[in-house]
Image 1 (cartoon, rainbow, N blue to C red):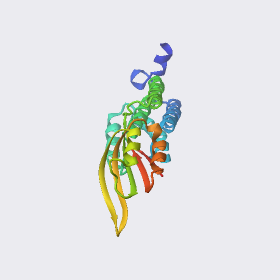
Image 2 (tube, helix red, strand yellow; image 1 turned 90 degrees about the vertical axis):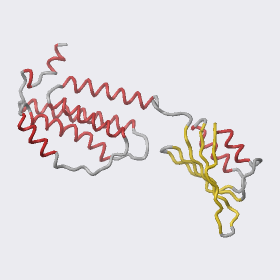
Image 3 (cartoon, one colour; image 1 turned 180 degrees about the vertical axis):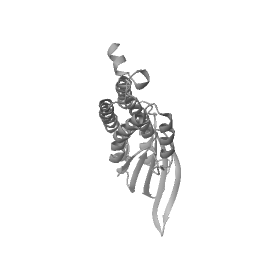
Image 4 (cartoon, one colour; image 1 turned 120 degrees about the vertical axis):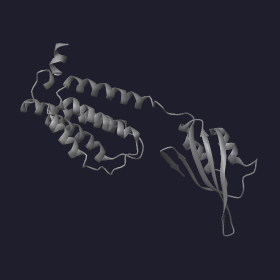
Length: 231
């Protein structure tokens, strides 16, 4: 407990913003910012990965730590800095809510290190990292069965005895025909679109392979959330 209290010493409890303490705060912010960035990199999934965003997580942590050192206990400086920051306009649109959570983590860790609450910063970063890794490893929040959107072109129409409904029944808990549109220009091809409720997403490739074996089928594509599988 004594070591924890020593790490938590702040200017409000008797510490001072000396050059050594500022350097220590910035270095710790840099290290913990890298931890946050590595966790984001290791647990990221989807198509919206950005190297600049990962680097920004580190920079944000260090910059916020520096801001806290600049403010110190001076209310006038804090108000002036808030006014200066209000002039900045960020035009990048963050599409993933998870990215916003990581930005917020970087801000809080930077505030903790900048105010010399080193133990809070270290313990907080460790626990947050473990939580993110747990959520990633367990796929927490994944909804089963998965929603899917199937498109294909078929020469001719689908009747009740056609093999395509039989294939879909094997792999889907439910499927609904959304649209069927003839290609036109005298072509017998018909474009079909189905909404699917997949039983097991691990068998998506097998389902697409079985559909490809159907005579006359072409341009098969399956869209599932952030994944796109095409034949």
